[in-house]
Length: 453
Ligand SMILES: [Zn+2]
Image 1 (cartoon, protein in one colour):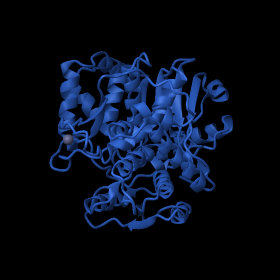
Image 2: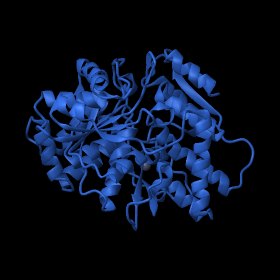
Image 3: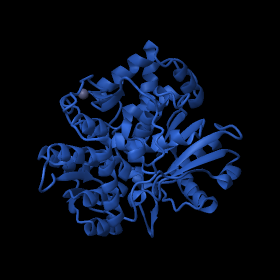
Image 4: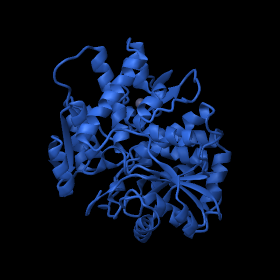
């Protein structure tokens, strides 16, 4: 049974309330963030279906709502399959379990065992559609239960890259009108595709004296006017995290056990989804322990690293200058008052830890240049609990990783999509990895001709 609650203020959501955003969000300095709690956990699903939204349906809130409302298991499965059929018409294909392979040549080059989950063949060419399918399924279940006919409600997203493409693709497939808030310098190839998919483009200029991403600010205004949050920020819609968890569940089901997982972080939804999926799996007895989580950002913008350092400082028990030693000490002390109290404090004083990056960020990995890590609290928790720590990479490693990915794998990954590897290279250069260590990466987005998004 799935319950939603706010990790910031503790508010428990009723089962009828849509788990988008904490009702108290925006009124204070608390980091309001809806999270799931599995009560009365059963076992990890053993369904071998090739569609992850079928295979892992029993871990989905939309499935629970559907069955509580009187839909049958077969009807829910048919709903997922019908959306997949529409996706085949709109895009190159529907959702399938994505490949997870040991990349031998990459491993040899690095003297490691490197497992790569490849999202470049996912719906619309990245992992983003997974997040948004979590929301779509919930909306479609409600529509079915309420027997609604006619036009579907308006959706909104702020993005100019893979998230926008995924949102426009899913909205088109499921029949929803959508507003996409894009910056003035949006990639023309992306803009063309968004237009082809029938989405309404809203160019968002930075206004005098405004801090934070103008697209995100305009998106928030659209939500205030009644649009539904269809983005990849967990703070705006808890279901976007749930959808992304399919990727973590797939990893668990594959049985591949890694020591460390490097995850590139922009807004933080992917890493948040992974951490929560792995935690579910530990709770369900399907995974012995979480791998060390390393969130990877670039020097262009690393607000998460800044927040993590401030939390560690507040915990105050880790004396070493070595981030690995420090992380290990905190992980050992997990659950003790020093750690718990620091996390509670951080969740209630957001602005002391997380604020928009001051400079206009630059990196070739521009898909992870969000000036705020919206899901930061979950990532800090996940890293501290697992003994991992954040890595901020310099631009040469970003480029080297992208080149290496193309040299020694057959995956058509974008520069953003291979930036987790840059984090690995950085840690390796510092001597932080042992020979033969088993590590995991997510290659999250495909190159799009010249236009790398
Ligand atoms: Zn709250």
